[in-house]
Image (cartoon, rainbow, N blue to C red):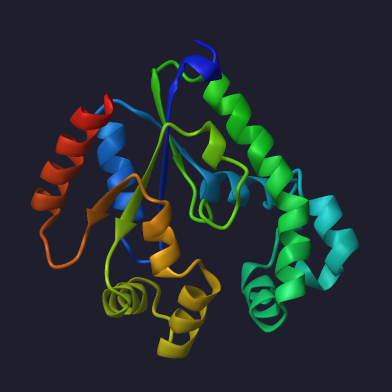
Length: 201
């Protein structure tokens, strides 16, 4: 089945929103889920497709001993220097986009969910998507979840949230919103199932 005949659904949400949980639930319901973060990690591992260009652009000090991207060092750099973030995205986004396009074409299911954290920040995919689902929660819930999950400080967590699209901008881009705040996983699962039925997933 070609990409043009597939039901392409975009899934996004801020860090700590529960987007990955929703992606897993959609996969359980039979959709093919493509995770842009996993693809980004693959191309920045040792020997990954993006590493030669990253080393040329940023220097060997941004690599680990085995030749992978030093994520902590890069995270510190892009938070301190927005231009560095744009330089990194210029190198990685075309490779991520190509990998997603190939995976969509080869997917065996009609419905393909593109799990893209920066979906709202980039206009690359929106025109190709039948629907955009935003997983949402309050900023305070985001902070609590990320601090608990990652062990990061309040300031680090808040800095990551502020580096992403504002919550209002994500909601404005949504065709459907899954509110994941103060509910159980069982309730969230029921909401995801109901939405999947509505969207033909």
